[in-house]
Image 1 (cartoon, rainbow, N blue to C red):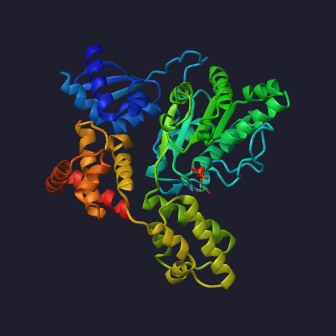
Image 2: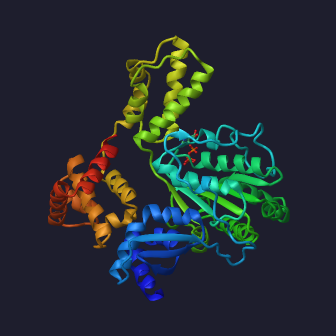
Image 3: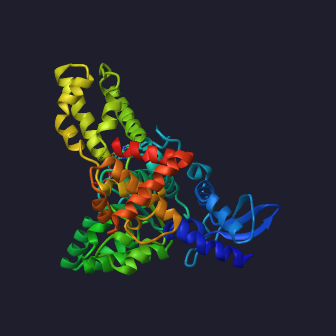
Length: 466
Ligand SMILES: Nc1ncnc2c1ncn2[C@@H]1O[C@H](COP(=O)(O)OP(=O)(O)OP(=O)(O)O)[C@@H](O)[C@H]1O
């Protein structure tokens, strides 16, 4: 049995990618097969739910291919005692493990009256508006949200650190503050320290200058939860990295939770020491994906309700929010700014917000967002959609789980940009134009016979054109 699972794992690592494999599938143990059901021991329910939803088909396929035909997977939660951890991680509660329902603010404890409770003086203040209650959950951020919720509950968590990454203004800081608020409400005596990596460096340099480094170390090592925002900032700063590494290790060894955010995955942060990358990769790495139209609309609706509570006579015309969600796709911060400007405009001029008013008032923002679709956008979106590495878009891998998305990206590049085949070839790792042509033809063929693939292509097109 071990041998079959070993072979299946080797194949799964290639098909789902090493990141997914290491996080989700590697922690599982195949305990037996009985009446067409493969039984697995999983360290947490969170992991088994996620695997069941996202990788069940791959696992079933690989087991069958390696001589163990099964129809279903079943998971038993068997907590593991991690080395250096005092107690085993329990299965997360249903609330943490259940997929969040999209497009609704999720219930949570309200923001504490003051955001300063329990912080040491080293930290940055928390924004009382950044709570789970104000965070809109949709497909692009549901995993990040579920993991943040789980960490906020406290107690031993199956992953340390929680590493949140994603593009500008997608809600990393919001989620970190929400964790801090929620955790603090549940554990009023706990010390939560939130700060940016830049502040970490500043405090460190200050401690060196003032010869208070032992106090600095003591303060950091005494917190119950450490949250460092924008960790990419310390890349290339050797002594800060060194100190960060020791702080990190000391806290993890004590079983204290660490939450980190960055604009990209640890492996992609240039100038970050390998040992730090590897430490950061030990926990759970979660990507906040670019927003979808539905998520943007949900955020706009929620913010509008907030404004309405202050200004009950606010009139907003039909289709205005939909228009904004469609046209402002860069990031949530810009979307919020646009809405704020619109409301300020309407309240000063005492005018209803119609589509025309929105177009006029936001002309500059709309112009900036009116950009052309680039091959980079296409490659990124397709890679995200199929959960493969961006590098695989230009790389040599021929495995179908990589080659097919690459061909879809080529097809979309031809359809949505004015680039010639040789130009597209150059952008796909210097491939010949005949390879591009072959890829495009293949997808043209497949969309007529493979319904699921046709839907994927249509969805990607909509997302790119949104
Ligand atoms: N899902 C969401 N629901 C509600 N508000 C959101 C959501 N995502 C982002 N926002 C809002 O968008 C703004 C930007 O979010 P935030 O500062 O958390 O982004 P970030 O990912 O940390 O960005 P940066 O990379 O610039 O640090 C905040 O006001 C935040 O409240």
